[in-house]
Every structure is written in C-alpha cells, then in structure tokens.
Length: 120
Ligand code: HEC
Ligand code: HEC
Ligand code: HEC
Ligand code: HEC
Image (cartoon, rainbow, N blue to C red):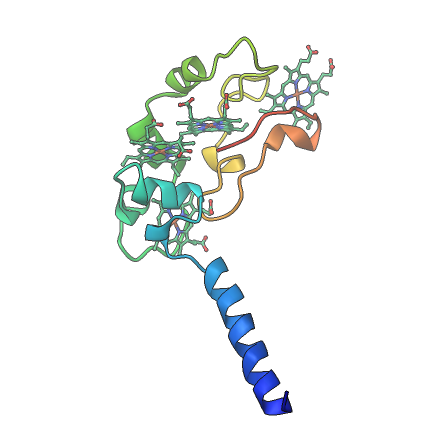
C-alpha cells in the first residue's frame, strides 16, 4: 500500500470513530439533557429559560417539573436500596451535585461513602 493511500485510510478511520462518538442530541448520547429532549418532551429552554443558554440553570427549574424534594424522596424510598439519595443527612442538595445534564452523573455521597447506586 502506498503511503498516501495509507494516510487516507487512517484519516477515514479516525473520522468515523470521531463521528460515532459525537452524537447529536436527537440521536441520544444517553446524557440526562439528551433524554429530556428526545424522551421526556423538554426543550433547552425548559431547563435554561432560553434557547441560547450560556450558564447552568437553577435547581428551581428542575423542581418546576419534578415537584418538591419530599416528592422526590417518596419516589426513591426503595427499601431494597441502602440509601435514599433524596433524603440524607445532607438535606436538600442542588440536583447538579449528582445529576449532570451534559456529562456523566456522579454520586456526591461517594466522596465519603461507597454506595452501589447509579445516578441517572
Ligand atoms: C419541562 C419539564 C422538566 C424539566 C425542567 C426537568 N425535567 Fe427531568 N424529567 C421530566 C419528565 C417529563 C421526565 C420523565 C418522567 C419522570 O421520570 O419523571 C423526567 C425525568 C427525569 C429523570 C429520570 C429519567 C431519566 O431520563 O434519567 C431525572 C433524573 C430528571 N428528570 C432530572 C432532572 C433535573 C436534574 C432537571 C434540572 C436540571 C430536570 N430533570 C428538569 C421533565 C422535566
Ligand atoms: C445525592 C445525589 C442526588 C441529588 C442531589 C439528587 N438526586 Fe435525583 N437521583 C439520585 C439517584 C442515585 C437516583 C436513582 C435512584 C434509584 O435508582 O433508586 C435519582 C433519581 C432521580 C429521579 C428518578 C426517580 C424515579 O425513580 O422515577 C428523578 C426524577 C430525580 N432523581 C430528580 C432529581 C432532582 C430534580 C433533583 C434536585 C432537586 C435531584 N434528583 C437531586 C441522586 C440524586
Ligand atoms: C434537563 C435540563 C437541561 C436541558 C434539557 C438542557 N440543559 Fe444545558 N445544562 C443543564 C445543566 C444542569 C447544566 C450545568 C452543567 C451540567 O450539568 O452538565 C447545563 C449547562 C449548559 C451549558 C454550559 C453552561 C456553562 O456553565 O458553561 C450550555 C451552553 C448548555 N447547557 C446548553 C444547552 C442547550 C443548547 C440545550 C438544548 C440542546 C440544553 N443545554 C439542554 C441542564 C439542561
Ligand atoms: C463529607 C463526607 C460525607 C458525605 C459527602 C456524605 N456523608 Fe453520609 N456520613 C458521613 C459520616 C462521617 C457519617 C457518620 C459515620 C458513621 O456513623 O458511620 C455518615 C453517615 C451516613 C449514613 C448513616 C450510616 C449508618 O450506618 O447509620 C447514611 C445512610 C449516609 N451517611 C448517607 C449519605 C448520603 C445518602 C449521602 C449523599 C447525599 C452522604 N451520606 C454524603 C459522611 C459523609
């Protein structure tokens, strides 16, 4: 194989790998914001109050649709789980401490604990 042919081949390969990682929201990259857009019928503005956001939304925005912290705690009061993430010795926390919208979510609690529970 000539060097130039090889280079083109490598370029195509690199591009296709890149393209498969860079999914648009409508294709769903399984991030929370994408699921709100494609599965939960929300728009950017439902969270951000604007179609051209430049900063993170307030926790109040999430609560507009999801009810109170007590409502959330009732939803996740599962006796089979070792914790209720919405009712702890930390009281009500900003959603974004755990639920990231455009990146992978984290469990704030695991800074100190080691709970086997996934954050959607
Ligand atoms: C315009 C209304 C609306 C807003 C604003 C909103 N949500 Fe939702 N969300 C929904 C609906 C509808 C569902 C699907 C039904 C359900 O699970 O409650 C959902 C589902 C979820 C789920 C579980 C399902 C999944 O796909 O993981 C989480 C977690 C969640 N929302 C967190 C948030 C957070 C955090 C915010 C603020 C950054 C937020 N939501 C803002 C309407 C909204
Ligand atoms: C300490 C971390 C943490 C914080 C803070 C947090 N959550 Fe959650 N949330 C979780 C975890 C973990 C789950 C998954 C629970 C499970 O699988 O039983 C969850 C589940 C949910 C669900 C899905 C509930 C269901 O079973 O249908 C919604 C909706 C949700 N959270 C919304 C919110 C909103 C809105 C806020 C802010 C007001 C918030 N959460 C704050 C950790 C958190
Ligand atoms: C479920 C609510 C939700 C939806 C829907 C959503 N976002 Fe976000 N967005 C957030 C949250 C929460 C953050 C803070 C960072 C994070 O959690 O990933 C954020 C951060 C951002 C930021 C970065 C701000 C900063 O701090 O640098 C931009 C830009 C942005 N969003 C644009 C958008 C656009 C454009 C859309 C629609 C295609 C959208 N968002 C849909 C909740 C949402
Ligand atoms: C900064 C560190 C820290 C963070 C973050 C933290 N905890 Fe804790 N947690 C502790 C300490 C310290 C104790 C008391 C130690 C003990 O008695 O075992 C404790 C105790 C607990 C207990 C009681 C344990 C028992 O065996 O009775 C639960 C349940 C708990 N935490 C849940 C949570 C949840 C849920 C979160 C996230 C919302 C969280 N923790 C975040 C430090 C932390």
